[in-house]
Amino acid sequence: MSVINKQQGLSIVELMVALTLGLILTAGLVQIFSGNQRSFIVGEASNRVQETGRMTTEFLSRAVRNADYWGCIPRENVANKLDNTHPAYQASSDLYSFSDGFMAYQSDGTTLGLAGTDALILRGVGGAGNVQITSVMPNSSANLKVNTVAGISESDILLISDCIAGDIFQVTGTQTGANPGINHNTGSSVVPGNGKPREGVDVTVDNNCPGSAANCLSKQYDESAQIYNPYYFQFFLNADANGRRALFRQSGAAAAQEIMDGVWDLQMRVGIDSGLSNGEVTQWIDINGPTALSTAAAADVVAVQISVLARSPENNIVDAPMELCFPSWTDCSGGPNYDVEAEVAADSRHLYRVFTTTATIRNRILRVEQNES
Image 1 (cartoon, rainbow, N blue to C red):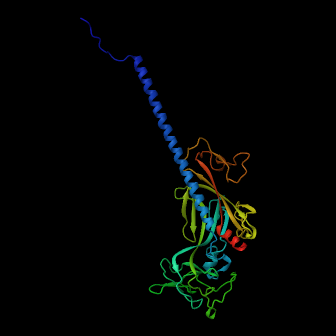
Image 2 (image 1 turned 90 degrees about the vertical axis):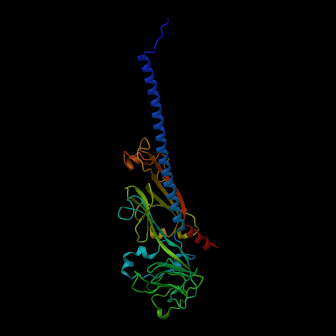
Image 3 (image 1 turned 180 degrees about the vertical axis):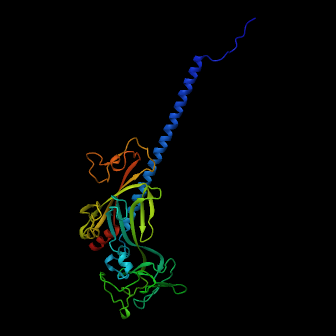
């Protein structure tokens, strides 16, 4: 009879071969998983940085393009009727003057913004919804008859303009019902209140001001006039609630609001057209200090170049601290000028990327074109 051989187990050689193959397969799987995870992290960081840079440059360039808009007339034809003798006005003249449609500075740590980063101040007006004048004013101190006062409250500051003259005034009360109206008395219920007309308006009209009342507007406005909301925006960098650098916007005296996180640095330079002669830039001024741009030069700015340094929220994205050319208009023919290890920290291996845009102050260019025609 033949003897049937039974399997007695695996030899040590076979076990070692099997274990080796298993380890090789496991190592391959771990490497694939690690590579995919690394690619996902780097890709996500790149997308975050790309989104931060794109949205920040778009938001700021749009704000710059719309700056210094005062309806269909230049700022010099707009009278500021706010009471400049009131202590509140004198304490916050930047807030209530509504002058200097554009200003830029580099923070030194005592002003808004992180030290060494640039900040913007923009003024102008925006629409006030569907508010329309419904009848001519019987005199320039009378209240304004409108179709609605929805969205308008006591103490609001408005601008009225009819392309001939304009006035910035404070609402001291409203009337609702069948005959809506807006009051602009001197009053004591609002701060700083309205005061007598002041110098600085080129257009002179007979404004039919009874008894030279302190609350007279520049003229008797009629149905052709429009009402706007003046604004005073400040854009700057600061730390957010998580301690990360972010772009903030402050509207008037309200609390600043975070616009976009991940903005590590913001630098600007401005293009000057002296006297707004032809709308062409003849000089670029770097905003490299708190007083780099004078008030006179700011009035001649027609273009703004903005360079944003965006940073990923996660660290350890790149193998070593990055070197970049920032701001983008710097001459980097000899190599990068911004060393993250020296400028930020030796262990900062975040992903950094530079985004740059150039925006014109559209309303100043249009003003030049109108003067030439």
